[in-house]
Amino acid sequence: MKSFSLALLLLVCLPRLAPARKDSWHLKKVSDFSWENCDDGQDPMLIKSLTVKPVPVNIPGNITVSMEGTTGVHLSSPIKGVVVMEKEVAPGIWFQLPCYKKIGSCIYKDVCETIDYFIPPGVPCPEPFHTYGLPCHCPFKKGTYSLPKTVFQIPPLKLPPSLSSGTYRAHIVLSNGTTLRNTRLGCFKIMITLKEASRPMPGKSDH
Image 1 (spheres, helix red, strand yellow):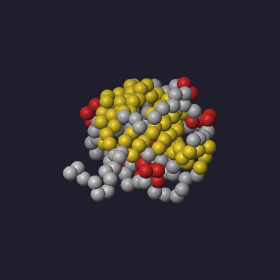
Image 2: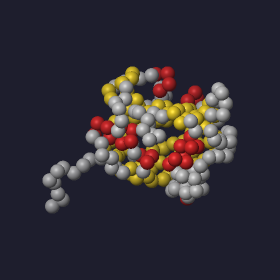
Image 3: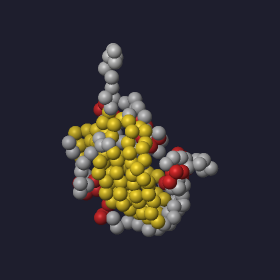
Image 4: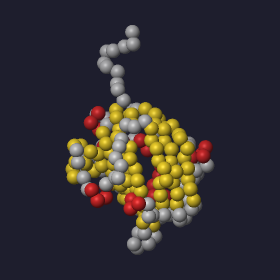
């Protein structure tokens, strides 16, 4: 699944090392999976609930995700998105993952166009969007959007353990791309720990 293809983030030039930035990255609660809205949830777009199980997330493996979000405004193109994604390489030391094929630390001039890149217009919304009647293209009407507990499969990634496991964090800002001031619509911080699933030892069998 494209949404879980961390390999795409790590196939280009070495990212830069950077110390932790306490101002923009600080999470009030930190665990193997943490999230929060920026600035105590003052933006029109908010995450109300978000759960991921199990944590750490095993790769490959199955994860169960549930989410509820709200928007107090009608969302239509263009919506600018700025994503900074980093991996912790030592306590308090992070490197920024590059932007590769629209995944990673990227600036999206229009998130709506990016959605169309992954789900071409005219193609039926994939699961679980179809089952739960969730839209998968702009515009998005004002209201509440809920995803009940849904199981996703993370495929094997051909990466060394140092890259397929560890702690990652993302800082995501969405804004109205039609205004000169880029009025902020939503801001989210997410931290998650990944763990490579155990592999059978070479030459070992069940007999």
